[in-house]
Length: 193
Image (cartoon, rainbow, N blue to C red; front, side, top):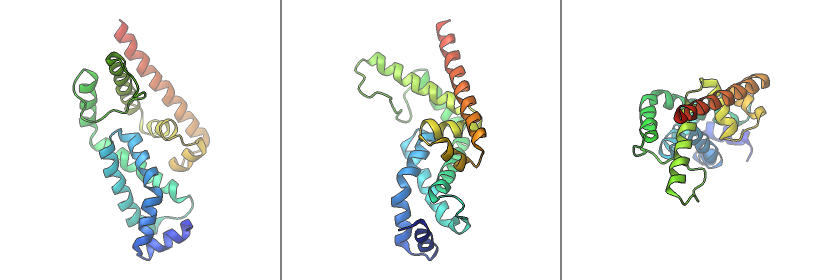
């Protein structure tokens, strides 16, 4: 089934076409939301909101980009809105974890095969530090960095999602990498001092 057939079927209120849209794009949307939120439950909730928004506004879709790109935009915007609305709660939770409190959500460990408890604690600290550094970036840097590093989108795909030029995306990602590196180095310098 082509994207055009899918869109026409949804617009004609045929439920099976909407089910196909969800089945086809749910992994993409869920992964995108999870890359921003780092919380599977919140990502699942936002994913549902993305598909509700897509259903309600599909008549506005201009077909100038791929349907997946349009859904990426909705997912990114919904995720950023969620972060903004819950920023204080998320920062407090991350700081509590960072300073030894119990995590309120499951962190995604880079290497689940770590055996030593000290290695596991170090790995959790690195993840929290990275999440805090990325969360502190200006909005466009954060979006570009997340789409590039966590979603593994190409620069060309990011230009479509963010509706920016290739040079702008390259600049955003370069600045984001530099800013994340500065934050992490600053943390370790303070820790060693």
